[in-house]
Image 1 (cartoon, rainbow, N blue to C red):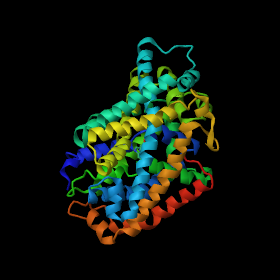
Image 2: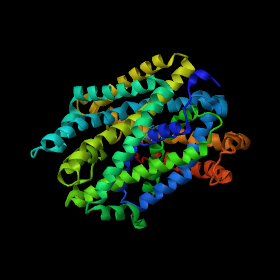
Image 3: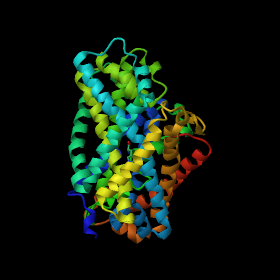
Image 4: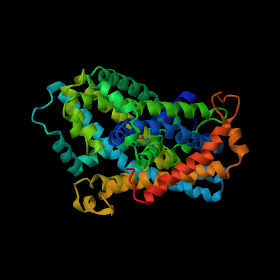
Length: 461
Ligand code: TRP
């Protein structure tokens, strides 16, 4: 093993970092929104099935490739499966770079809304504020966007710069407990609201008459994004796991925590929405709307302890996003360190800087610069920001995920995957034959269905 690569200091450190990668804007921002769009219950049930039958097996697959080879995605896939598979790793590195460039923009807004919420808590929410146009103004304000995005990328670079143990793991160890506590407080407050009953019914009572095949594919796409699968993030994090530690249990914990957080976020938002008369009609349109337009005012109107919870909510969003942007940048940086062979500090600064260049284009494409905002490469997805999101979520992750699944299931020998997953630490709930069945048949078929539906024009972003 190459000693200079660094390792997680403990199993807990690894689990927290990987869970931090998984929990992010996908849980807090996308999941409630698409659950809303797909009429709740039945969609949530399908999502849970996708997580268990496709997400969990692929999570184990990515982690095992990383742990086995102790390399970043390109070298790992090359060594574990074959030389040509390095290209799949490279595809993942590009995906990390692309996702990071626009994800950091939304993450940056949470910093601004935190400071705003502190002001509102101290001075009262202004009666005349039109939250929708305030948000529109921010979106179109190029210099504000650049400062916020730059700040967030700076924080991300700051963590990755110090390495696996002193940077990434340390941030996760501090952030995740805070995140869980804030979420618990929000959940308690939400459950005390009169709308919480309707919210729980909406989320947990399946009504299959509302479900179409588009929803099934949407659930699968969301499972991928939320678990950070399909682009080598979990290969990278797995590569810092010492060879004698079980990844089966870790995968189980990561998947369960990620799912609980997504469900909690949905319960919190829908409890608020169902409590306010007329709100259900207002909540359509964008998911961003829920976080940055509808919620701010509601904290000061209806949420119990809202003055206290409002600012904390944006701390939650920022921390959840930070542990995710860290994992996205780490995929790129670990590739640069291993393949270009430069030091971590240099690799981090170069990768972060290049990402910022792409971010600038995306940040200015939300209204600030018309030429960047209005062109349509994909129909209905105007501007650089939407184009990147659509390309990454709809094209890059499913294709990358499909290739990884096929690689692990069909191109690695049974013996080599079995010896990675089964050892004296393997928990008794794990069944290797079931895993292999999922990774060889269920996951590829399901992911192929996504890819085909994207080709036929379905949108998951
Ligand atoms: N999983 C994160 C979220 O839900 C986003 C994310 C981080 C991601 N790293 C990733 C998505 C790698 C895909 C691949 O917000």
